[in-house]
Length: 255
Image (cartoon, rainbow, N blue to C red; front, side, top):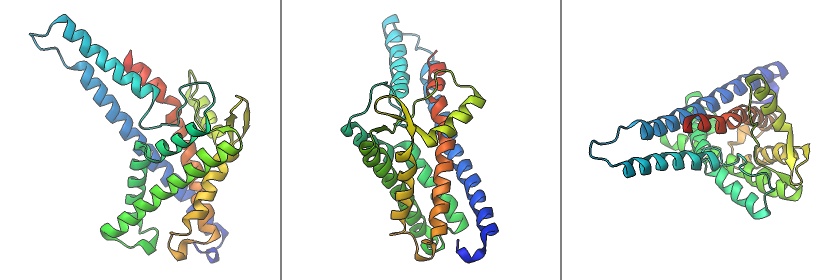
């Protein structure tokens, strides 16, 4: 978005992009949630064969519970949901960076974002067709990976901050909105105390600065960089809502 378009036009485009990004993120996670529920419900609702013994029924039921428990403890969708109270080691933060970069939410989000960019021809320099979509998808994955590298691993290790998301035990809708937004700006230190979330705020900014190395030349302006950065923070706040309710969802399914 060239700076010559004026501040009003920039604000219109910025908030339009934020709404689109939040909607896209919500659609991605909702789709994953529905798929997960369907898989678990299917495993639990199939009737036993007439010749099945009591032992096989118990084994099948235990397998279903084990599957849901595994997802609840180590989500393939949101690996950054905290499952323990203790701090992460530097090695643990590096592993979390890798897991986040290749998570189902990152893959699906990048694919959907690339599709939206393809429909809007943004950025224009990537063109159309399969090649254009591939460039957009690759750029989105690269931005996600570099944001996790800087924020989840490098800065979190240097500043002794915990990059995980700690969901509320009994979230309410209004309280979850406030908590999800606040965790964009506040995080937990390794010692358990709250602190300004510099790792979470600076990570995406460094990532967007790095993205200018492979972003189309006409979209490397300061205005475009901060527009993408604003979308990143808004998307994080939206996804925090789903992270906050994720353990509650699987507890209800398990019961």
